[in-house]
Length: 224
Image (cartoon, rainbow, N blue to C red; front, top):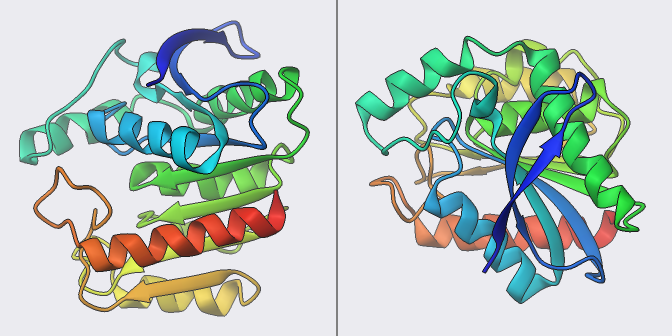
């Protein structure tokens, strides 16, 4: 099991983060939360990566910029509050926290760090790949909003996963990303909705989750 730590961004903002694994792990990842915060699910993802795949993982608490120690329920009220908190945080500030997490892993001796984001975190992972040079590989699961910034080119190999039945991300968005970024690997899971990788959400789809997970691990194996 992981534990909470405190990190400091380049602008001196102090924030919490969940850390799993040890510095002698073979690979390192920054995991980016959904719109609901550092939920039990996100922590479980970090623990799985550390315990079963040998990763050293840090997941920053991005909501700390607006409201500290915030974890929201997987319901409409939780999403509404999460979106409101998100709107209070500048994208550059988010990236400052994400890169501070990468630098913390660098200080532990990891020279190649990946980034893995879910939901809102998928968009943040995309922006970390396109707007910084701190990551050696990036993967986003059901990242809404990527289409609107898909003219920005990632500085590292990038892989995207979408649900074919995602009511929040239309197929036209996926088509836009494919057109703008043909070099990016994109997978669509026909029967899966938004949040298909989270066991705590009604949209959980185990076959899609397992396949996306296998592809994600293989991708990081190649590039980290």
